[in-house]
Amino acid sequence: MLFTALNGIAQSNPKVDTLLKNAKLDIYENPGKVIKLGDSIYNDSKSTLNQRVDALMLISSAYSSRRDYQKSLKYFMIASDISKKANNVQLQILVLSRTAVRYQQMKVYDKAIQCLDECDRLMKANPSKDAPTGFTMATNYLVRGLIYKEQLTCDIAIGYFDKGIEEYKKLKSTVKQANLSIAYYNRGNCYVQLADYTAANKSFTEAINYAEEISANSLKAFAQKGLAEVYSHENNHEKAISVLHEALKISKDVGDLVLNRELYLSLANNYLAINDLEKYEKYNKLFLEIQSVIKESERRSVGDSIEELKATEGQKLSTERTKYFSIIGVIFVLTLASFFALYKYQKRSIKSIEMLNEEVSRIKTGLRNNNVT
Image (cartoon, rainbow, N blue to C red; front, top):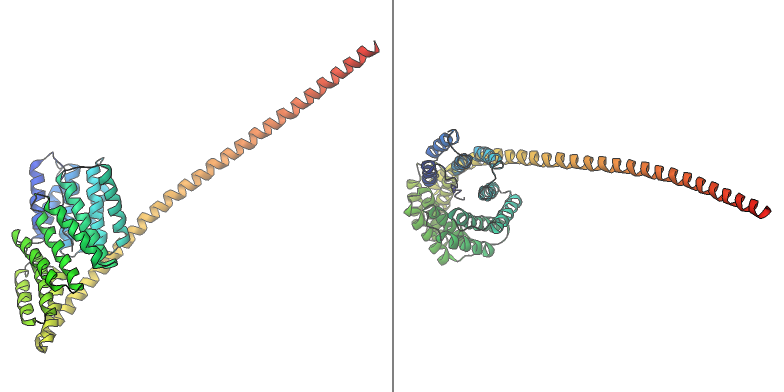
């Protein structure tokens, strides 16, 4: 999970920029409101191109928070296409970073890394001290941490989580609070995998504190789920159950399927540990039901992503094929021209030799006639 907040870079309409900025804080708690706002800004003829891109990415993030990756990808691809028309490096950097987030969420890690590498290259080539670039740099560290957590080791991932946390703390924007909560939450998960439960407890507590500062109940619930896992490993199942029920209570209106799935699974496991089979079966059933819904949503989203990638690669192949045939055509024309030039050269050479032979013959004839005389 990653908070894909936007950094408004358009300055022509401060009121719209303020609306976009404030909407970032509602992505998790009220995604429906965010979607309506983003749609109105996108369809407003007075909105600048950059603001329209921001609005579309805001809509994409809201759908992502609902785990509706199919619609999230749809709006993001529209934003990506529009952004290509803008001659704005900072916008390109922003879109690349958000593209990496989308690919990371869909577990297409090689494409995510490619986007991050290109994004980092552009930021180095176009240094800026403004907040959007700083936020993007921090987010890129966080995304790399999430990828390396899955593909490499938590020892490596923690280093990137720490770098992201350090960069976020340099920013004044309140938007950073959400990502700080997420960074600490994922760092806590890594410490759980490394069986360092003291460090994990500290990270999850930090995640809860940052979530509370912006009243982000879904982020707080995720952090509480992590804290409950620490208690479970310490065989304090009653305390874990208490924390999990509190998490369910504060997140009941959020509608985050993944969050609910994780809470139900953790409750089922903890009730099983204390031999409460009735409640184990209840929460395990809820877990399986939500798991089925999420899998179907992910299947559709990944299918759409594959089709989009196939279309992109097909376009690249078509472009390369056109270049290939163009090069072949040029080579063919140049070869014909070379043969024609060589033919004319040989023809001129033969004629020159014939003329030279005639001249030699004439000179010899003249010399013989002079000798006879």
